[in-house]
Image (cartoon, rainbow, N blue to C red):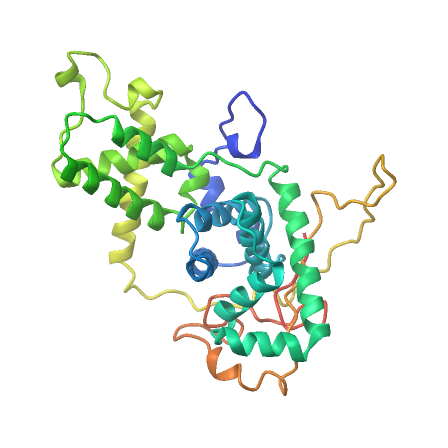
Amino acid sequence: MMTSGKRSCWDIILSKKEASEDTPTRADGMPKFNEQQVRKAYVHMLYEVCKRFRTSPEVPMLAALYCHRFYAAKSMVRNDRFTVASAAIFLAFKVSDIAWPLRHVLEACYSSYKRLPEEDVKKVFMDHQEYYRSLKMKVLQAERALLYVIGFDFKPDMPTKHFLSKIKSFEHLDKEQLTHLRQICWNFANDSIKTTLWIQYSAKELAFAFIQVTAKLSNIDLPNRKSNNDDQDWYETEGVSIIRMQECTNDLLDLYSDKKKSGEKRPRAKQANADAPPAKKQAPKPSEDGMQHPDSSMHVPATPELSSAITATDSEHCKPCPGQDDHHDANGFGTGKSVDGFAGTAVHA
């Protein structure tokens, strides 16, 4: 594990093994493929919600990065994915100065999660106020858990800032080449945010890897040792080593080679959460102001579900996808019965 001088959670760069193999989720028995699918599912939901609110492209990336950092420390099996993702997008909206009430955000999240028209969701929330209040409280609790995991550091460094700035500095390229570089780098950002790469590399390393791969694939010449009559390539002058650049570009290209292998038979999702042992409850310590505040070990409660009679119209929208079992819905979120008595993911730290 690599860290820089300042102790922020965003300065903690995980190794590939830590980020994708030795995770709390894998320790709880979820297969690697299922963990990857859940990650892609909540990122997809975040993008759908942000599209409805017409946010900038950085907002869903910020929310996804919150989720990735959270699940680097907590298990997907024991902390409800829909609830965490909803809290992450609400927090990202606030950090980005997007003033939408929580109710509107939850309507959009629930619509994406259940694959229901938003008008139907509004009616459900209006007709079942107790259900809505329960969902709202769980998302607010998830937001507090998220804040503690990220150490109340709301604004991580983003690759988008670095590649946009660096591309501008390539004065030897024409307008068409610069536009092409920007567009493909955005594509790399949108694809890689669905993975753990954003917590395996710094924002600058990722941004420069996007540029390097794009330039090579597009036959665009960038400043190098020969053109500069120097002993450094363009990214080395910015503090990115050759080794890190090679590692990052290789991992980035691996994303696309893995897609070609997607036809391989994958293990069926298994019910990894139903038998999770209940966690010991610990009362939060009182703070100096005399109030009870949650600590970083708190867990995220499961998303409540309405009764089958109320959600009869939901069922046709929530059938498992081919290759999934009955404990995973069409969005890749768990639906096994939790210890709370709700139909949702088990919720322990």
